[in-house]
Image 1 (cartoon, rainbow, N blue to C red):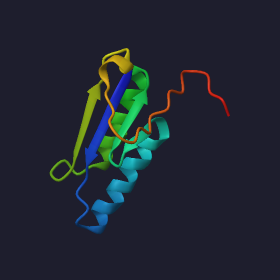
Image 2: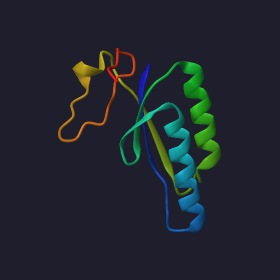
Image 3: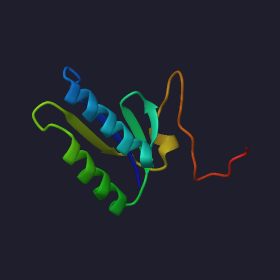
Amino acid sequence: MEIIISYDVSTETKEGRRRLRKVAQVCKNLGQRVQKSVFEFSIDEMQLERIVHRLREIIDQEQDSIRIYRLLEPREKYVQVYGRNLYVDFQKPMVV
């Protein structure tokens, strides 16, 4: 499945900045950053559950926000990008 995770973590305190780094690291492990606080993923249900569990352990429920959107497929039909496009389709053959 194709999903997007976006987050808004309060960085007014040292603890908030630490949470921000941790959230970004969890997302970087399986997804690809397409904007500063937005990651796209191509994952299965089990991976999604693990990510959600990890993120909920990190964030402060009173100050931070995580949003998860499931993309309709095929993504090329439903996702429009204007300007810089950082997405790489790792499912297709790549030339190195």
